Image (cartoon, rainbow, N blue to C red):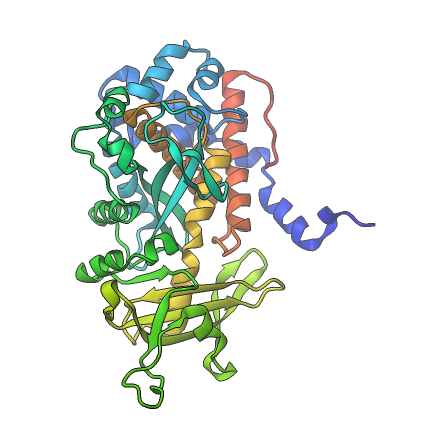
Length: 437
């Protein structure tokens, strides 16, 4: 029986992940040049040095990329590194804004898609800021965890995580004792995740260009969120649940009725004839062009108190893979925006999931022991910096455009991480790192 690794697709992915000594050469110098872009955001020389230590540690091949092993890897005392990440007096928002401007300079595109996605981080105990039994998408169930709302800019070059915010439940936001223990700023109040998303989009818009907003059904289902985007004149393609009620305005009303009936979007899709479905390409994946069948309609949704919402475009995307998947989305894009464009934007939504997976696997996004509000945002900012460096390295190494399945992106990120780890280890005089991802 032949090995799965002998399959042509597997061989192509392995070749994409291969890192030669020539690829590794110069990585240390590129990292220093990259960090020079951000070091002015740190107030003191010691902070600048520690920023380099932490980001380099996140790019290393450590199994656990928390402050303590990073400090030991750099041959440094543990406590200064822990304090720098957990409570250092540096402005992570200034660093984050600089990252967005850097992304704009390198990958800026007026057609970029800003994508929102919540991500859970399982935690033990109750002391960490925002930790509570709540939905953890990573585990697919209710679990004791922290939840962050993340924003990515997705372009033809790839996906870059450009902002993050810790979500506080109502109970947490109202607890003076918990807020004081975890140093939550006085101006921070309870916000639903979609309101946090609006804030992140507003901040991003000041620093980098974009043309679209997208997100999963946690955001798309919220009528007020879609309405806020329309008021701001922002184009969106947002996923909605399969049980969303819509009314197709082009359908004939039943006898004796004034309006067409309300139907779930999945029932609407099942009732459409083959002539209503169009074959489109949603960009390139690891296996070539990604093809889907797409249907659309101008619809109204049922708003609060049974009232009708404004006209929106319902877009149903169904892949033609061996195991087809279906997504339902609503958009405010005008008719001049073709169906293929809307399907393309909907496909970009998965870029944020791929970036979060890469951040957790290669930049230590989920590796932290901080408990405070400041510590969580410090840690996330430094991990996003490391991920952005890896994305630029992936591009330099010839990484392919991100596909809907994320395989090309993940392979390129791992190859870049291997290159960074190898040369950084050599610079420390340590043991030889792996040369393949």
